[in-house]
Length: 190
Image 1: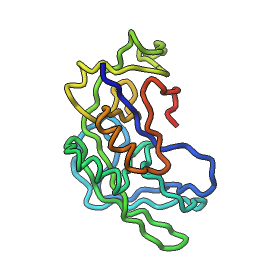
Image 2: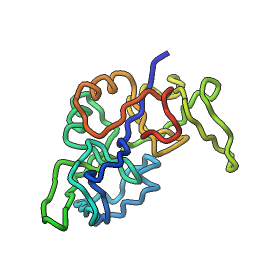
Image 3: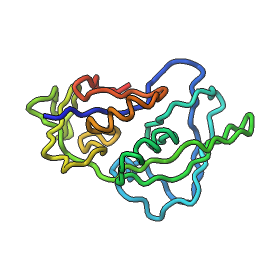
Image 4: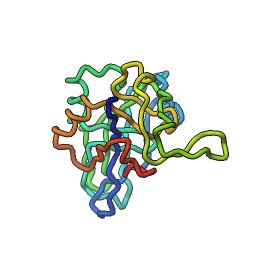
């Protein structure tokens, strides 16, 4: 049985962390569409993200909230691995206090959401809406259809990857990122 991993922004309490604020784009960047793994239509021709007024200056390699941003380093690693189920759109992160513009990030729209939690081998509970909540979990590899990186159907905020991608990203020297086995998931992923 193969191991699977999740990638997330490391939640830190350091005042130096960049805080993303308002998003300006010529296309609707609806979080529900992005978290569902749907293709964007129309596709954006520009995305400007303004830092919050209390923002620091530390940029992690992954921002993962209602939208997902990957740094050039993460994108390059995944491109080198031949990953083709992510649509990328260039992003300008604008610091309104200094007028600095960071163009080292991409909106990463991970296309495809796969229902593949192996409930029998995971720490799960049924929630009141008929879904499941979980902490430590395993992936049923037979249901991934060989997809190497995807959003988890059971929780669209979770980005799951296989061992090969985990190895590549673990060697890339990423900063401000959690790369952990799904068995070590704590219910939050930070």
